[in-house]
Amino acid sequence: MNSLKVRAPRKLVAEINVVPYIDVMLVLLVVFMITAPMMTQGIKVELPQTDSTPITSDNQEPVVVTIKKDGSYYINVGGDTKQSSSLETVKGHALRIKKHKPDTLFLVEGDAAVDYGKVIALMSALQGAGIEKLGLVTEPPEK
Picture (cartoon, helix red, strand yellow):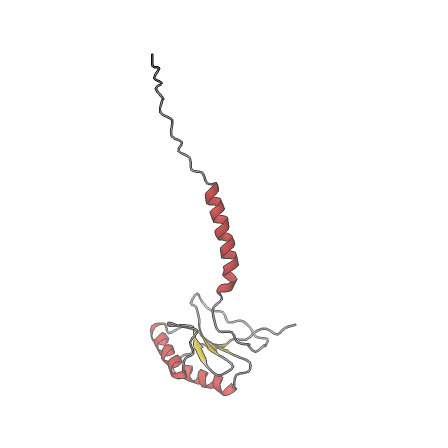
């Protein structure tokens, strides 16, 4: 006599185990916390220090034009923001931006050791392109 056992079908469990998802989420949180400070953009310059009031702007992001110590210009729009540009290229970008977004704020970020004439030439070129909202970036003095 063979005894055949008939197995009753098991009831399916319709629960999601969330513990692995929490582990993955915590790992991603740590990764983003570590990498976020490293993702700063811009060109490294030593800004002049002065007491000044911050510029209030609406939700529109300003265009930053940087002048390094060697007198090279960088603008934070377009393709490669780490590649130096000529004064004419910066002026061309400013004309295009002015045409599409007339109320854009332009900020000049000049190294403290850069020749004063370079800063004035840049500001003159930007004003020649019709830029009316123009500001200088400084750092607060160390106490």
